[in-house]
Length: 302
Image 1 (cartoon, rainbow, N blue to C red):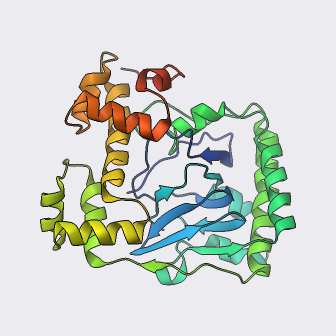
Image 2: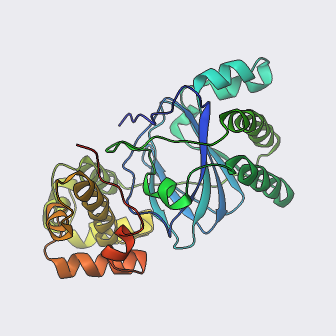
């Protein structure tokens, strides 16, 4: 799915710290015209790209190119990772020698995730630089809540000093690529079972709320086999993954409705009862929905 990050002309890209503890929804599989770099700083994060699951640990630097479909499918509760996006215009302006031609590719060769595990001192340097560049950006809760940047809302990225942000992104892009080219340490992927791939496709489509029986039949596997293999290969139980998607849909329904009705949004998202919804929400975010939504979830302007 092609998404629009809706970056204004004043910005050459964006940068923020994604934190599992702040996320209020899950991104579907997507790609965007901007080059993306992630740096894992805490916990673990699992991505699926082209039928393979990668789990990355701290100090891992990874890249997603403009035509590369990718999705975060699992995070540890303490996961933190920087997300940087770079416009094509910045790359063209900054990359004038052959050393940086790799940044201009549209997709990763072999359909994998280009990545490397950095030396401790290099990862620490990038973290300090990223935090400095982020100074003057929007509230972390807002940035995490609108991860994907307003695909279903009026949200747009902002920074109080666009010139400083752009200069920082320019240097960050160069430095990250230099580290990538200098390092050869990497992580091996898990090749996903065909039934797991099909289950992900059906669930991410968003057109219906699948029962386990329906999903297993469509994926060509038994319920027990699909549940077991999905958990082993994706890293989270199938039920938890489905509930994460429902929570994402709940937030979309809540923001888009005329009235702030949590119960109606929960049923529209596929939860069978308010009690089920509340339990899943509480287990995921360690607080009730009213408390979380009171932090400032904005509704789409009508």
